[in-house]
Length: 375
Ligand SMILES: [Zn+2]
Image (cartoon, rainbow, N blue to C red; front, side, top):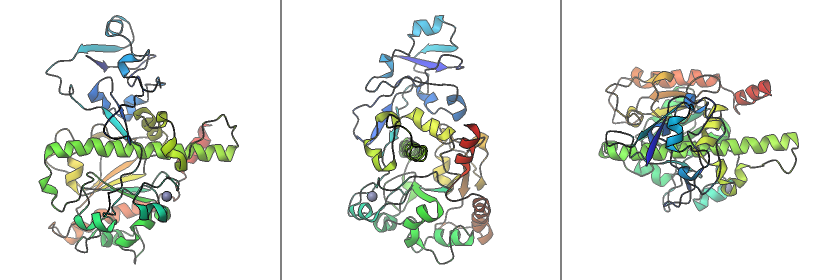
């Protein structure tokens, strides 16, 4: 096996040369093996130069006609460097990138679920992913560490009464005064606020999850975030088709048919295109430093709360970091009652985040404005 390192994409693009739906352990995932696993964690900036890629399903990248042979790549002038896989390559064994087609829903009797979009009552009750509501670009996506035992069973994030999260959202004027954890399912439709966690297993002790586990969670979290991007893109396409009366030949997909939409809608490159279009949340806020720090290849010794520098985001971060349609990344102090800190230190970043969010419309219109300007 060869590992292709893309140095500069000029006129020949193949960083992701094929869409491959591999028979993995779960049909909910679409896996792709990137040309070079570390570039997997391809930044948006590098992705934008990759242009069109082959979309022949069911083939591995090595089978793709657009993947140049190593010999040709090395000899040609297509701006690539090819290196044999070596034991020193830290990326050599990186897992393939995945895209999770559906939001995570905990198995019964638990009720916790990822909430990127409102779930209809029937799907909420049946504990199934809901494909009956439109998934929109969010104002805010909150990313916790993992559901507490309490949240896992209640279905509402941060529902343990000892957790200050909901009170902090009120303090920051991010939600109305009288809203509590039980309003969690309302936030997606009414305020554009979604919820996910780094890990989708219940537990009250974050420290018991070791580095290896956290790295596995990172890959899984990114697969879920990419899935969100792909579902938003499908819903936006469907909405455009409806409003413009496109011909039936036009690919029409909506969130209501996302489970049956083609695998080409759920690929790493489709998610990157969606990110480029600004379909990511306006803000992703990590409710706690630990799960954010664990996204880095080397866990930072110190993480400041508040807005993070776009140049210093974790590798492979699936949303656009800079420019129009960029997703701001914020780190909030842990809302756990156990974390010791002053009232000011705990509340300040929530108040700042509230100010930021008041400048973002709901439903979001920024991506539509950009699209109108460019078409
Ligand atoms: Zn539903």
